[in-house]
Image (tube, rainbow, N blue to C red):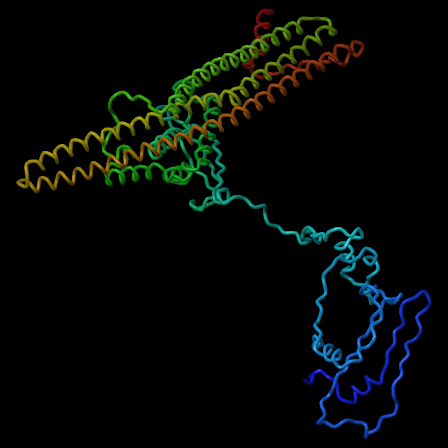
Length: 580
């Protein structure tokens, strides 16, 4: 059978006539390959196309060469003589197989060798992006695992923006109030005299017409604001105004203390997340005709029916009933704590008032001491003694002024905070009473609902003879159930709100007392520093005995100026009377 991969006859002829010899490997250099072929060919020797072609395979022996980089492909074998019989040639032809077509070999991704890592550089102009340096970093010379590429951190933008730092949405949406109460002055005649204050407000709230405005208010207007906010917001601790005072209400110290307390009250109300949004606060701060607007508002609420009674009154129950027994341990503990705190603050206020009275007594005693020293200096003939006595008299007057000022500072810094939190505890107790009223309203509504249901059951047992009455009672039962549901929700909401209010009360108490104590200590230290400086100056004057001009007093010039009413003037007047 003819092999399809066989060569032509001429090729077979040439193969037969060609001999290839590869010498065996030895220690001597390999000789050149000798090839001999038959040169004489003619057209007469070419076989006919009818004659089948014969393939005579001659085995070729492969041997390793010393300079071959692939090394030996197999063990050395002895040279096999070519097949000379036709049977051997046929067996060789059967074993022949078609050649395998060439295929493309895929390259393998391997790590760059260490010896070539620093040598394989791209030719050409230098790379502005320094890619070669990145290759060195990715393929370290040690031949270790491939490291991730380094990530460069974000650099600050060279463009400066004028935007403000970001704040939370709640802080951005919350309006800011700055309220000052000042310019207290007395108005009215003897029977209707009172103090009027200027209330100046600066705010960022869009609910007001202007960002800055000023109105005039008296004390009873502040009291109306407290009562209204307390009724509109059950469970909220409303900062109260200072208490009334029938005697000495026009004294300067009392007026200043009340002004500071009213200013603090308004700022706390405006800073509260719920009270600051109340419409009555807007009416108080902004209305130019306050009394007329308040009367119009009250008349409108009465016409609407029962809304002026507050949230509890709108349910139809006044809040009376049996004695309330607290079931929640948390509220019971807070009530006991508030009672103890109130007693301690009242004791502290009493001690504070005693200390203030003592400072005032020391100031008065220093004034009397100064008057006596001045009187002694006037009768003394020796200027070396009269001069220091008179200087000591002036120093005692300075000490008197320091004691008076320090007593006033104690009241305005520490005393006003104590009084404020005693009133705040009273406001917290009012919230507890409101919660008790809500509890009684809830149980009263449940009692009314049970009565309506009993009447309904009685009508149902009588049959359909009183269908109209049954429909009416069913509607009353539905209304009673609605009131019970509303009263229960109000009681639960007040409980959650009061928990948040008491936590807020504790945080503000710590901050306010810390600030008050710091201010109190700073004023006390400044007063003592001033006294030390005055005493040191006086001692330096006493040490300079040789200088007669240290305690020099100019001659007294008689004048027709009327006598004053100070302690020194009274002492001098008594001395003049005694000398006469």
